[in-house]
Amino acid sequence: MGEGQPIDPASMLATHFPRDLTDTVMSGESATVVLDIAGHGHWTVSIDSGVAELRSADGPRKPTCTIRTDADTLADVLIGRRSGVDAFLDGDLVTRGSLATVLQIGGAFAPDVELSTRPQSREVDAGGVRTAYLEAGRADAPPVVLLHGLGATNASMLPVLADLAEDHRVIAPDTPGFGASEAPCWTYTAHQLYSWLRAFLDAVDARGAVVVGNSLGGRLALELAMHDPEAVAKLVLLCPSPAFRRFRQLVPLVKLLPVDVARLPAAPVPRPVVMAGVKAMFADPSRVPQSWFDAAVDEFEIAMSSGAHRRAALSALFNIYTEEAFGDTGFWGRLPNLRTPALFLWGSEDRLVPASFARHVSEAMPTAESVVIPNCGHVPQLELPALTMQLVREFLSSGRTPNAQASTEYDLALG
Image 1 (tube, rainbow, N blue to C red):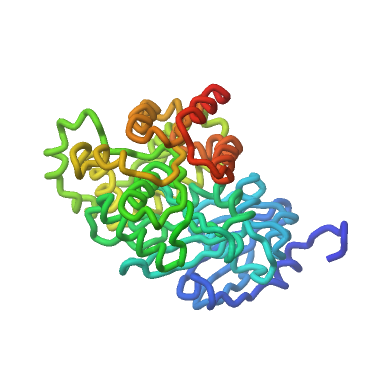
Image 2 (cartoon, rainbow, N blue to C red; image 1 turned 45 degrees about the horizontal axis):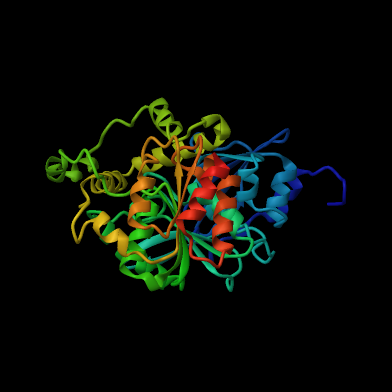
């Protein structure tokens, strides 16, 4: 294909298929991927028994996923000039259906081309749990582990992965019970998830990593650092979900509720309701492309079609509310003992984890850096990715232990 010549998708696709995927996580999977190429029609890739083959233009009625893009972007991704993650984040590649499948197959193309932001999909046994994860960046770079929130997947951490993969080894697992990972019949307490995370770090050789967590992922990161401080170099906590300090009157009742009821067949939540719930996590949803919301709702609907994953989500939700808050074994009683350098980022308009928690964290950890981001919701890495990554990189590059004065200066600068 010469410089400046128009791209012929038919010829381009013919040179890339069939493709051997036996050495990838797709080796035992079956999937159909419809490629909707602007101005060039539809093409179907069928994956079965570790082989990806190009089929007729007439795709199935319900493909595993659909990828909409233009010929130039598709060519860049196929030859390794650009990662699918970068194209997705830039809005040049739109997905519907299983975003996890898109990410799983994305790293299988041009595997020998050095492109740090193209994640590889992998699986590992961590404490007896089949755990799916994305890995990007150089293998010998400092490790960073990304932990997503309740009801989300590692895809919610893609802006962080794409940024930090330039100079870090970035590892983003799907927490057990979510995404492509196994959903064991657990109670999903913070301690149980901590035990899994410790085993995961051992399995992927990432002890001593920087850990970045959003919401439930932030709570899990804190639990790891409180139990095993040697496992964590620094903490970046994006709107972490701490134990409830108030409104605990219903805790005894919630503890009695049978989470196994979530396994029973149930009518799916109407898509507009799910979409409204997702958008409610943002202070200004217009900052985020509608295609991202569509992808997030698709992932949620796929996960909630599994009884085991519904049970996991309900169990984790109940434990956030019922977790012991005070006393020697309570979250707030243990937090002052944390010595790991930590950056807390809060959204001023967060409806799930109010920014008022920043005051309680500062009282418990006066040496931690706590920043309230104005006009931001619960997922700053998606709503304000540039500002979020600026703050994260400033914290990671600093050799100092954060202090309260630095936090005040950041608040004034941002406000």
